[in-house]
Amino acid sequence: MRIGLDPGHGTAGAISGRDTGTAEYAPAEHELNFGVVAVLARQLEAEGHTVFVSRAQDPDFGRVFTPSARGRWAADRDLDVFVSVHHDGNDNPAFGGLHGFYDNEGAPNGKALATQIAMALCGTLGIPYSSYGGGGPACTWPQGHLGVLSGGANWAVTGAACLIECGTMTNAADRAIIRAAGYYTRAAEAIRQGIYTYAGLSPAVVVPPAPPAIVVVPAGFTEYMALYSRGPAVRELQRLLSAIGYRDEAGDPLVMDGDFGPKTLRGVQWAQARLVDLAGNALDQDGIVGPLTYGAIAAQALVGALLPPAADEPVDLGLATVATRSLERALWYIAHDVRERPMGSNRGGPGTGQPADASVNAILGRWFPNEAQPWCAAFVGACCIHAGLAHLPSWPPLVSSWRDWAQKQVTAAMPNGLLMDPATSRPRPGDLFLFGDRHIGFVVSYDPVTGKIVTAEGNFGDAAGTRRITWRGGSITHGVRLSALE
Ligand SMILES: [Zn+2]
Image (tube, rainbow, N blue to C red; front, side, top):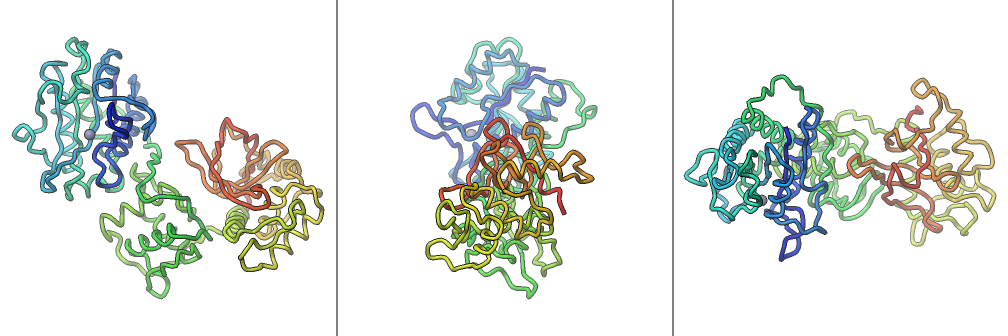
C-alpha cells in the first residue's frame, strides 16, 4: 500500500509563529504526534509498504505547513491510506478520550478507516471514546474545519483519509496513559492494526521490528549531565530521582546540592536499570543523562512514585573500564575548569577561582613536558594515565601516535585493533574521535537520531570543554574503541 502519515503540528502556522498543538503539558502535542508516527512509519516500511511522512523532523518551526497544505501534499501522492496523527486538548479538564474524524465529502472510505483505528487504539490503550458526535469511535466534521482532510479533490477517487486524536492531553487519566513508558510503540501498533483491519490485511503474518530509539527532547531537559556536572539542572535531576524513589545506602534521598557526585551517579544508573524510554526500549546504564534518560525519569516522576522506594543495592558504577574512568576524569577536568597553563605548554593547572589539584600538573607535566605538542592529545593522555591505561602510545604523544597505538591494540572483540570507521560504527561513552592527525577528544554520548556526539575535549583555547558535533560525514576521520579495553 501507499501510506501517508502526518504528525500533526510542529511547523510554523500560516499566521502566527510556532504551531505546537496542545502544549500545556510536556511533551507537547507536536512531539507526541511525531514520536508515534516515527515508530509507525518504520514498522510499515519494514513490512513492505511505501510510506510518506509529511515532516521529517520535530520540531520544524522554520517551515510553514498548514493543515490544508498537508491535505494537498497527501492528495498529490496517490495514497491508499492517509492518517493525520494528533492528541487532543480541551479547556475542560473533565473532557477526555480518543476519537477518529473523517470527511464525508472527501475520500469515501474515511469513515471505515477512522473507525478501525479508533477501535484499535481504544482496545490497546484503554482510553475511551470522547463525546464528539455523540460518542463512538469516529464522526465526521463540518467540511473545511479539519483542513488536512479536505485539501484535495483527489480524495474522492480511491484513498481513505482520517485524522485521529489518540487521547486528550488535558485529561489526567488520558495523560497518564500517554506518558507511560512504551506509549509510542503501543499507539503505533494500534494504528497499524487499524489500518490493516481496514485494508483487509492480516497483521498476524508480520513481525514488527524493534522500535527505534526516538529522541524527543523532553521539557525541562537543558543539557547533558554526567559525573561532575554541576548547576541547577543537576539539582532538578536530584529532585526527580528522589521523587521516583531513589534512596542511598542510609535510606536517605539525594541531597539537592546541584553537584553530580557518585551518589547521583548511582541514582541515575539505578533509574536506568528500571525505566524504559517512550518507545519501550531499555536505557543504557551509562550513568549519563541525555534526553532519553531524562525523559524517562521526568515522565516517571510525573506519573508518581510507581517505583517502590528501595534501599541502595550494589550497582556497577560503570567506572570499571579504562574508557569510563578516562571519561570520568575528562568530565572532572572540565567541571573544574582545568586549563593549559601557560598557554602552549601542555601543562595543566586549575582555572580561575578553582581549587588547586596537584594531580593535574603532575599528570600533564609528567607525560607532556614539551611544548608544541597538541593540547588535545595531552588532555586525552592525562585522562588515560589517570584511568590506569597500561600501555600508552609511543612518544612523542601526537594525535597520530594515538591512531597508530589504536591500530596495534588487538583484543578478542576487535582483532584488527581499536580503530573504528565512523561510517560503519556507533561510538560508546569513553571512545575517542579523531580529526585526521589534527585533533582528538572523548565521546560522552551519541544520539542515533541526529547522528551527533557530545564530546569532552581539550581544545577550547587553553581550556577543555564539550560540544556537539557530527559523528558520520563530518570532520571525524576515525574513532578509537577505547571502551573495548578492560
Ligand atoms: Zn492537534
